[in-house]
Length: 274
Length: 315
Image (cartoon, rainbow over all chains, first blue to last red; front, side, top):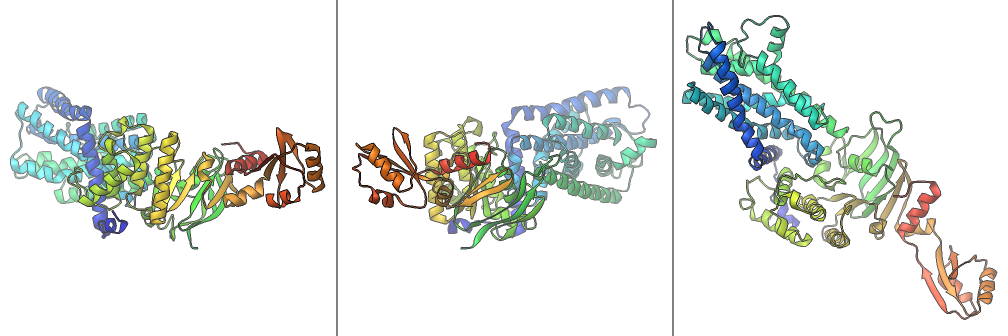
């Protein structure tokens, strides 16, 4: 085949090239997900542990006197937590790509570094959506459900939440060079968010340093937006939702952009200076 | 001819390193040339190639590839180059074809489709054509981890050429390959050069692979030590040798001494010469010869001679 004929297939517009690159990087992660039985099992087991065991135990023993249904509160918290946790774990696989030198293949391609990072985040979010579906199934067995409208609204918000989670993880990934450190980093990123952002424990009465931390974690705002959608028009809305959804959305967008720019800078710098 | 690679006073100082890995290197490569960048381990070859391919940032100096600055116009540089890294950079969990598809789509050659069958016919025929040329058509759909080192190297070559780059960077491309794989690989690369006029930038420890290049540059301790065509390099570094013998050795030796030529005996009479041709020497000899051979030094001889003279570590 002549090079001239092949050249006709090359994407002309910069935007379509970048979009195609994001889809390609995302598709690679989805392909790897299906090729890794361990990852599939983990994605399905995590909801059982997080929602079934941790959530179930909290609901049975510590949910009294809250003024709202803790099970429903926790279901939304676990869904968002699952999106954050799985996306973060997926993004940290960039460290593994670096150790196998596969990141070089991406770094030498004529695409924006942002496309690499966004593609990786969206690719990782596929496993997060599987985890989200698993959480819903476990919640169903526990008697906690969402309406079709609530579910669709959460699904519509999930790309933004995954992008926010992945962008935060990228800042740490850019500073890490080994797989062992990456595993520790996942814990460092996900655990404070799970306990301090209101995923399973309401944070209406947080104060001091815990209050400050809760207000700088992106998951706090993602959770609040998710609950604003799920609890819209219900009597529990004021007890459960902390902020105005428009402000929440603005804060999420701002934090995501800042984290994405900083994380991409760190990642590109660590690749070029290694 | 126009320079397609231009390097001017390039310096690279790694973080925490006491001295720069590359110390003010300058050279040019003409479009369509086959250029060899040689040097012992740790001389600065891979550092230089990494800067030229935008995967490593420089400390100072100017580098332009295909007319584009490597720092300011990195994206344009990447569009014009194909690279085979010293360390394989394939995804071991994907199949051979999936690795190629990933690359072709990243370079905007085709829209991504989730399977080989769904990709455009042009992609499928190009992949099959390249796979047949390098002989990996039977392994195309196998996972990378099941392919031999040689097959993985060939796959990397297919991948690096699928977007038809103007310049192909080969960083020790035949490392770990058997003789047959090496030969088929070079046949293929030479064909590509002839067909497309691709500029090839090679680093290798197999000096015989650089024997027929257009220009050689030897880097040592981060600095360009010597450059030129292989012939120029051989002439400047080594004397050619005549191997002679005769029934009357004494007369032959007297004749050679009379012409101001030194000799040594190593089985036959070995006569190093420089600045004159073998024809001149033989024409002056009256002694009847029984052995007459012209010993042409190889590029490897010149390279080793240079390293021994300068105290560099042999590769």
